Image (tube, rainbow, N blue to C red; front, side, top):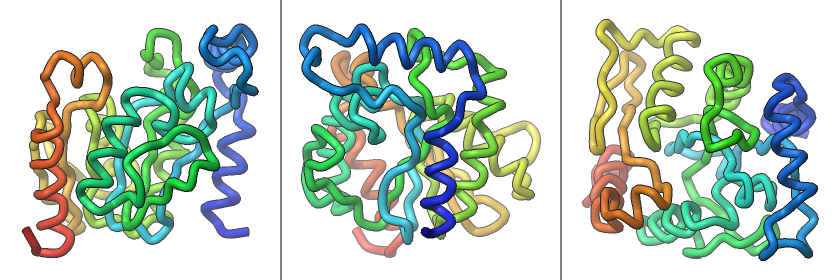
Length: 228
């Protein structure tokens, strides 16, 4: 078992946040009508992707009826539909869809992590819950050879900056502000980029369009390979 696999086993077994444990298990028990025949995952969700990834995507948290149901980041919901279609267009995923853990999806040179590993009520983890989960993010990122960190949304951005600070990569003061397309060259040579979150709230209102996401991914590709 690799260090990453051992860490993921530890993540899945975590019960550190009573509110989140109660919520994720209640959702898994009650279920949504459309998924009543599903055996919900109902546990913390570890990262997913290529262990040799140069691109690490930092998300917010599992969705109640997405990753909390399927057990894989961004799998089984509209946010994941948008994200994986975009990653497929950019050459980081072998297929544009993600329905369940055994659907054949594989990421190439990309890995997805999150600020929180349990589905939170209203998609809003509390500060103390993010703090308890932070060591998992630090340890996971330390095991990945990332050159570009792509933060989805302000919470992903702040979680990435905090992780960098904790692990000895100073980001300066004042901290760089989040923005779609924001780009920060870090002292260790890596790059932090910002992208609006792929939530339905953003993608269905046009705040984040496929073209906007593709532009960010094109920049990621340039940073990784120097190619357009």
